[in-house]
Image 1 (cartoon, helix red, strand yellow):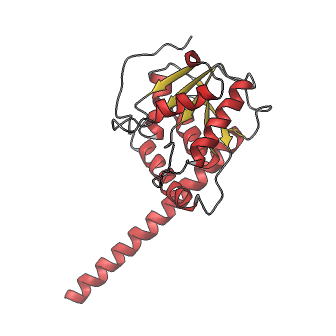
Image 2 (cartoon, one colour; image 1 turned 90 degrees about the vertical axis):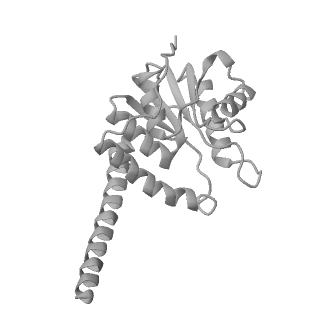
Amino acid sequence: MMKKILKNFFKFFLLLFVAGFIFVVFANYSIKKSTEAFLYDNTSKIPQTKTAMLLGTSKTLSNGYPNAYFTNRIKAAADLYKSGKIKYIIVSGDNSRKDYNEPEDMQQALMQQGIPQDKIFLDFAGFRTLDSVVRAKEIFGQKQLIIISQKFHNERAVFLARKNNIEAYGYNAENVNKYAGLKTNLREYLAKSKAYWDLLFGIEPKFGGDKVLIP
């Protein structure tokens, strides 16, 4: 009797694992395929929009060294602004601790690149990519948007934005070399699956807030 129970349990676990694997593969393929036409690597070809959104990440790594993902995103945002393709930038990131503030770090870095402070809007509740893209529409009133991050992240962000009726494009910041970014890229496979899951079940941002007018 016990052997039969264990055998059935093993079968159930195996089926669950296979179903999960298929879902991860499908979600990643679907997101990549549906967004490839909306991602750009240079400023000359990307459509002109009023506003871009820069997705947050930590300024430094846990060892104290500069985070190349952060540095490359700041450069991409500055290049896009200086090309004349955008007028304003929403910096959206995590501000869940007193000693950790992605939006202000990004704002300061952009200002060091010559972007005026009054052209930068801060979203302190961008705890997840879903939160950032939905808040760009619901809080900041943007129905057309360029999203700035690395390509693997832009795929997910543009997918979520377009599924929430935002005319979104992705401007790809330079990626980090494959070895340095291995953990991040592996985590992204699961993140894309979670994005698909959130979409299927209608998950909404954690926080709302007052409307912010972008001229």
